[in-house]
Image (cartoon, rainbow, N blue to C red; front, side, top):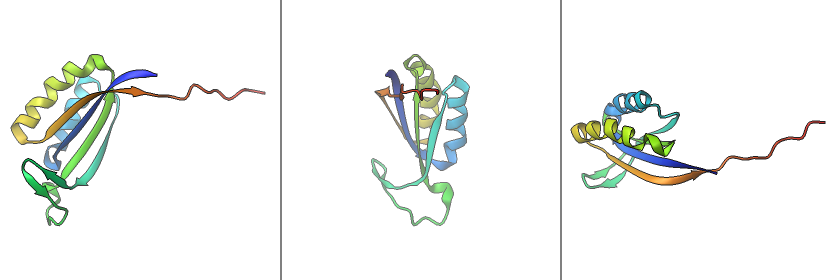
Length: 104
C-alpha cells in the first residue's frame, strides 16, 4: 500500500485545457476527466439542459505522490481563483495487487 494525495476539481469545461496543462507541468502522472457534471453548489444549481457545452462543468480526479501536493496547489489555485471552480485534496492509499502468477 502506498500513500497518495487525492485531488478532486469541479470547474467549467472552458478551463479544462488550462487545468490539465498545469497538472502535466508539475508531473501529475495520471488523471481522469468526467464531463457534463451537474449538481448544486455555492453558485447555485447546474443542470444538464444547457444548449452550449462550453458552460458544462467537468470533474477531474487525480492521485499523485504527496511530495507533489505543494506544486500542484501552486499551479491549480490561480486558475480556479481566476476562472472559478473548486478543488479538494485529501489523503488516500493506493492498493495494488501484489499477487504474481506462478510460472510453470
